[in-house]
Length: 258
Ligand SMILES: Nc1ncnc2c1ncn2[C@@H]1O[C@H](COP(=O)(O)OP(=O)(O)OP(=O)(O)O)[C@@H](O)[C@H]1O
Ligand SMILES: [Mg+2]
Image (tube, rainbow, N blue to C red; front, side, top):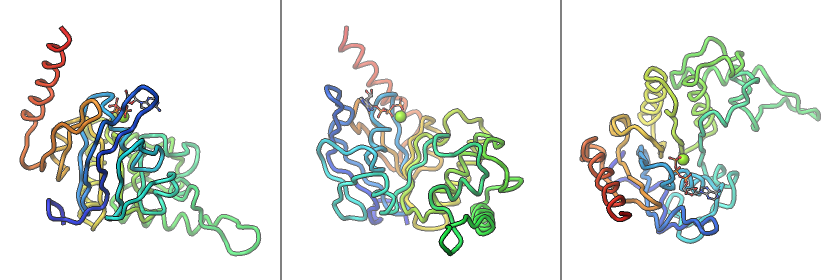
Protein backbone atom coordinates (compact mmCIF):
# COMPACT_ATOMS: atom_id res chain seq x y z
CA UNK A 1 0.00 0.00 0.00
CA UNK A 2 2.78 2.43 0.78
CA UNK A 3 5.74 3.66 -1.19
CA UNK A 4 6.35 5.78 -4.20
CA UNK A 5 3.61 4.24 -6.34
CA UNK A 6 0.62 4.79 -4.01
CA UNK A 7 -2.21 7.22 -4.64
CA UNK A 8 -1.93 10.56 -2.90
CA UNK A 9 -4.11 11.33 0.10
CA UNK A 10 -2.87 14.84 0.75
CA UNK A 11 -0.47 17.04 -1.18
CA UNK A 12 0.75 20.58 -0.84
CA UNK A 13 2.52 22.41 -3.62
CA UNK A 14 4.74 25.39 -3.04
CA UNK A 15 2.97 26.49 0.14
CA UNK A 16 3.95 29.88 1.57
CA UNK A 17 2.68 31.09 4.93
CA UNK A 18 3.48 34.53 6.29
CA UNK A 19 2.58 35.93 9.66
CA UNK A 20 3.19 39.65 9.13
CA UNK A 21 6.94 39.99 8.54
CA UNK A 22 7.65 36.34 9.49
CA UNK A 23 7.74 33.77 6.70
CA UNK A 24 6.94 30.52 8.49
CA UNK A 25 6.70 28.43 5.29
CA UNK A 26 8.71 29.40 2.24
CA UNK A 27 7.56 27.18 -0.62
CA UNK A 28 6.85 23.75 0.86
CA UNK A 29 5.83 20.80 -1.30
CA UNK A 30 4.96 17.52 0.42
CA UNK A 31 2.93 14.45 -0.55
CA UNK A 32 1.25 12.05 1.86
CA UNK A 33 0.35 8.84 0.05
CA UNK A 34 -2.60 6.62 0.91
CA UNK A 35 -1.77 4.04 3.56
CA UNK A 36 1.56 5.68 4.30
CA UNK A 37 3.16 7.04 7.45
CA UNK A 38 5.02 10.26 6.76
CA UNK A 39 7.47 11.48 9.40
CA UNK A 40 8.11 15.22 9.50
CA UNK A 41 11.38 16.16 11.20
CA UNK A 42 13.04 19.51 11.80
CA UNK A 43 14.35 22.16 14.14
CA UNK A 44 12.30 24.31 16.46
CA UNK A 45 10.65 27.05 14.45
CA UNK A 46 11.14 25.21 11.14
CA UNK A 47 7.43 25.55 10.31
CA UNK A 48 6.23 22.02 11.08
CA UNK A 49 3.26 22.98 13.25
CA UNK A 50 2.32 25.77 10.85
CA UNK A 51 2.20 23.21 8.04
CA UNK A 52 0.03 20.89 10.19
CA UNK A 53 -2.31 23.77 10.97
CA UNK A 54 -2.75 24.46 7.26
CA UNK A 55 -3.40 20.76 6.57
CA UNK A 56 -6.02 20.73 9.30
CA UNK A 57 -7.80 23.91 8.16
CA UNK A 58 -6.80 25.98 11.19
CA UNK A 59 -4.61 28.38 9.18
CA UNK A 60 -4.98 29.26 5.50
CA UNK A 61 -1.86 29.45 3.35
CA UNK A 62 -0.71 32.82 1.97
CA UNK A 63 -0.10 31.12 -1.39
CA UNK A 64 0.34 27.66 -2.84
CA UNK A 65 -1.99 24.78 -3.53
CA UNK A 66 -3.45 22.01 -1.41
CA UNK A 67 -4.96 18.79 -2.76
CA UNK A 68 -7.14 16.35 -0.81
CA UNK A 69 -7.48 12.96 -2.52
CA UNK A 70 -6.19 14.55 -5.69
CA UNK A 71 -8.70 17.43 -5.79
CA UNK A 72 -7.50 20.99 -5.26
CA UNK A 73 -9.11 22.35 -2.10
CA UNK A 74 -8.89 25.46 0.05
CA UNK A 75 -9.54 24.29 3.60
CA UNK A 76 -11.73 26.96 5.15
CA UNK A 77 -11.83 25.64 8.71
CA UNK A 78 -11.07 22.71 10.98
CA UNK A 79 -14.67 21.52 10.48
CA UNK A 80 -14.23 21.67 6.72
CA UNK A 81 -11.07 19.55 6.94
CA UNK A 82 -12.84 17.15 9.29
CA UNK A 83 -15.71 16.76 6.85
CA UNK A 84 -13.10 15.63 4.29
CA UNK A 85 -11.81 12.99 6.71
CA UNK A 86 -8.81 14.90 8.07
CA UNK A 87 -8.32 14.74 11.84
CA UNK A 88 -5.53 16.25 13.90
CA UNK A 89 -4.33 15.15 17.32
CA UNK A 90 -2.50 17.63 19.51
CA UNK A 91 -0.81 16.41 22.62
CA UNK A 92 -3.00 16.91 25.72
CA UNK A 93 -5.00 19.80 24.28
CA UNK A 94 -7.68 17.66 22.73
CA UNK A 95 -9.25 16.02 25.79
CA UNK A 96 -11.57 17.20 28.56
CA UNK A 97 -9.73 15.87 31.59
CA UNK A 98 -12.59 15.71 34.04
CA UNK A 99 -14.84 13.76 31.68
CA UNK A 100 -14.84 9.99 31.30
CA UNK A 101 -12.94 8.19 28.56
CA UNK A 102 -16.12 7.34 26.68
CA UNK A 103 -17.50 10.90 26.92
CA UNK A 104 -14.19 12.14 25.52
CA UNK A 105 -14.37 9.72 22.65
CA UNK A 106 -17.73 11.17 21.64
CA UNK A 107 -17.00 14.79 22.51
CA UNK A 108 -18.89 17.07 20.10
CA UNK A 109 -20.45 14.11 18.36
CA UNK A 110 -22.44 12.59 21.20
CA UNK A 111 -24.93 9.82 20.58
CA UNK A 112 -28.36 11.01 21.73
CA UNK A 113 -31.69 9.31 22.27
CA UNK A 114 -34.39 9.97 19.73
CA UNK A 115 -37.01 12.47 20.80
CA UNK A 116 -37.29 16.17 21.54
CA UNK A 117 -34.87 16.33 24.48
CA UNK A 118 -31.79 14.87 22.80
CA UNK A 119 -30.73 13.11 26.00
CA UNK A 120 -27.30 11.52 25.90
CA UNK A 121 -27.29 7.83 25.17
CA UNK A 122 -24.53 6.98 27.63
CA UNK A 123 -25.05 3.29 27.28
CA UNK A 124 -24.46 3.29 23.55
CA UNK A 125 -21.43 5.58 23.84
CA UNK A 126 -19.90 3.48 26.63
CA UNK A 127 -20.31 0.30 24.65
CA UNK A 128 -19.01 1.71 21.38
CA UNK A 129 -16.05 3.35 23.10
CA UNK A 130 -15.07 0.05 24.71
CA UNK A 131 -15.41 -1.75 21.37
CA UNK A 132 -13.33 0.83 19.56
CA UNK A 133 -10.51 0.68 22.15
CA UNK A 134 -10.59 -3.11 22.10
CA UNK A 135 -10.48 -3.01 18.33
CA UNK A 136 -7.28 -0.98 18.23
CA UNK A 137 -5.72 -2.72 21.23
CA UNK A 138 -5.77 0.09 23.79
CA UNK A 139 -6.20 -1.28 27.30
CA UNK A 140 -7.76 0.84 30.04
CA UNK A 141 -9.24 -0.36 33.35
CA UNK A 142 -12.67 1.07 32.47
CA UNK A 143 -14.08 3.55 29.96
CA UNK A 144 -15.87 5.22 32.91
CA UNK A 145 -12.57 6.55 34.28
CA UNK A 146 -12.02 10.29 33.97
CA UNK A 147 -9.21 11.00 31.52
CA UNK A 148 -7.19 12.82 34.19
CA UNK A 149 -6.56 9.45 35.86
CA UNK A 150 -4.75 8.09 32.82
CA UNK A 151 -1.05 8.24 32.02
CA UNK A 152 0.22 10.58 29.30
CA UNK A 153 0.59 7.67 26.90
CA UNK A 154 -2.89 6.32 27.59
CA UNK A 155 -4.33 9.80 27.19
CA UNK A 156 -2.60 10.23 23.85
CA UNK A 157 -3.91 6.80 22.81
CA UNK A 158 -7.47 7.93 23.64
CA UNK A 159 -6.99 11.09 21.56
CA UNK A 160 -5.79 8.97 18.63
CA UNK A 161 -8.64 6.49 19.18
CA UNK A 162 -11.14 9.32 19.11
CA UNK A 163 -9.78 10.59 15.81
CA UNK A 164 -9.87 7.08 14.35
CA UNK A 165 -13.37 6.52 15.73
CA UNK A 166 -14.50 9.54 13.74
CA UNK A 167 -13.81 7.75 10.43
CA UNK A 168 -10.76 9.90 9.74
CA UNK A 169 -8.94 8.78 6.62
CA UNK A 170 -6.06 11.18 7.16
CA UNK A 171 -4.56 11.52 10.60
CA UNK A 172 -2.20 14.36 11.54
CA UNK A 173 -0.20 13.98 14.74
CA UNK A 174 1.81 16.90 16.14
CA UNK A 175 4.54 15.42 18.30
CA UNK A 176 2.54 12.46 19.62
CA UNK A 177 5.53 11.22 21.60
CA UNK A 178 6.60 14.55 23.11
CA UNK A 179 7.46 14.36 26.81
CA UNK A 180 6.78 10.64 26.96
CA UNK A 181 8.84 7.90 28.53
CA UNK A 182 10.01 4.91 26.51
CA UNK A 183 7.11 2.71 27.66
CA UNK A 184 4.42 5.25 26.84
CA UNK A 185 6.04 6.11 23.53
CA UNK A 186 6.06 2.38 22.79
CA UNK A 187 2.30 2.22 23.40
CA UNK A 188 1.64 4.98 20.89
CA UNK A 189 4.09 3.55 18.34
CA UNK A 190 2.37 0.16 18.58
CA UNK A 191 -1.00 1.82 18.12
CA UNK A 192 0.15 3.76 15.07
CA UNK A 193 1.68 0.66 13.49
CA UNK A 194 -1.51 -1.35 14.17
CA UNK A 195 -3.67 1.39 12.64
CA UNK A 196 -1.49 1.39 9.56
CA UNK A 197 -1.77 -2.39 9.25
CA UNK A 198 -5.55 -2.21 9.48
CA UNK A 199 -6.05 -0.41 6.22
CA UNK A 200 -5.77 2.64 4.10
CA UNK A 201 -5.39 5.26 6.82
CA UNK A 202 -2.74 7.85 5.94
CA UNK A 203 -0.74 9.37 8.78
CA UNK A 204 1.54 12.42 8.89
CA UNK A 205 3.37 12.88 12.15
CA UNK A 206 5.75 15.52 13.45
CA UNK A 207 8.54 13.84 15.38
CA UNK A 208 11.70 14.80 17.20
CA UNK A 209 13.44 11.46 17.61
CA UNK A 210 15.13 10.33 14.37
CA UNK A 211 15.44 6.66 15.37
CA UNK A 212 11.77 6.35 16.37
CA UNK A 213 10.77 8.09 13.14
CA UNK A 214 12.81 5.79 10.92
CA UNK A 215 11.35 2.81 12.78
CA UNK A 216 7.73 3.57 11.94
CA UNK A 217 7.64 5.98 9.00
CA UNK A 218 7.60 4.92 5.35
CA UNK A 219 8.80 8.29 4.18
CA UNK A 220 10.47 11.20 5.95
CA UNK A 221 10.90 14.89 5.23
CA UNK A 222 13.27 17.23 6.98
CA UNK A 223 12.19 20.86 7.37
CA UNK A 224 14.58 23.70 8.07
CA UNK A 225 13.73 27.42 8.15
CA UNK A 226 10.41 27.06 6.38
CA UNK A 227 11.62 24.72 3.65
CA UNK A 228 11.90 21.02 2.98
CA UNK A 229 15.66 20.47 2.78
CA UNK A 230 15.73 16.68 2.55
CA UNK A 231 13.30 13.90 1.79
CA UNK A 232 13.71 10.14 1.56
CA UNK A 233 12.14 6.73 1.88
CA UNK A 234 12.78 5.83 5.53
CA UNK A 235 14.51 2.61 4.50
CA UNK A 236 17.01 4.54 2.37
CA UNK A 237 18.36 6.85 5.04
CA UNK A 238 19.77 6.53 8.55
CA UNK A 239 20.13 8.41 11.81
CA UNK A 240 23.79 9.32 11.08
CA UNK A 241 22.88 10.63 7.63
CA UNK A 242 20.10 12.84 9.02
CA UNK A 243 22.33 14.10 11.82
CA UNK A 244 25.00 14.90 9.28
CA UNK A 245 22.60 17.01 7.21
CA UNK A 246 21.47 18.96 10.26
CA UNK A 247 25.04 19.42 11.48
CA UNK A 248 26.19 20.68 8.09
CA UNK A 249 23.31 23.16 8.00
CA UNK A 250 24.16 24.37 11.47
CA UNK A 251 27.82 24.83 10.53
CA UNK A 252 26.93 26.78 7.39
CA UNK A 253 24.63 29.03 9.37
CA UNK A 254 27.33 29.74 11.94
CA UNK A 255 29.95 30.42 9.31
CA UNK A 256 27.57 32.67 7.43
CA UNK A 257 26.97 34.73 10.51
CA UNK A 258 30.58 35.18 11.53
N1 LIG B 1 0.37 32.52 14.87
C1 LIG B 1 1.62 32.95 14.59
N2 LIG B 1 1.91 34.26 14.50
C2 LIG B 1 3.15 34.70 14.20
N3 LIG B 1 4.19 33.88 13.99
C3 LIG B 1 3.98 32.56 14.06
C4 LIG B 1 2.69 32.01 14.38
N4 LIG B 1 2.78 30.67 14.39
C5 LIG B 1 4.07 30.36 14.11
N5 LIG B 1 4.79 31.51 13.92
C6 LIG B 1 6.21 31.56 13.55
O1 LIG B 1 6.42 30.71 12.46
C7 LIG B 1 7.64 30.01 12.59
C8 LIG B 1 7.39 28.50 12.54
O2 LIG B 1 6.70 28.09 13.72
P1 LIG B 1 6.15 26.61 13.93
O3 LIG B 1 5.38 26.60 15.19
O4 LIG B 1 5.48 26.17 12.70
O5 LIG B 1 7.53 25.81 14.11
P2 LIG B 1 7.76 24.26 14.48
O6 LIG B 1 8.59 23.69 13.39
O7 LIG B 1 6.47 23.60 14.79
O8 LIG B 1 8.67 24.38 15.78
P3 LIG B 1 8.70 23.45 17.12
O9 LIG B 1 9.59 22.29 16.79
O10 LIG B 1 9.37 24.37 18.10
O11 LIG B 1 7.32 23.08 17.49
C9 LIG B 1 8.28 30.49 13.88
O12 LIG B 1 9.21 31.50 13.58
C10 LIG B 1 7.10 31.04 14.65
O13 LIG B 1 7.51 32.06 15.52
MG1 LIG C 1 5.67 22.72 16.52
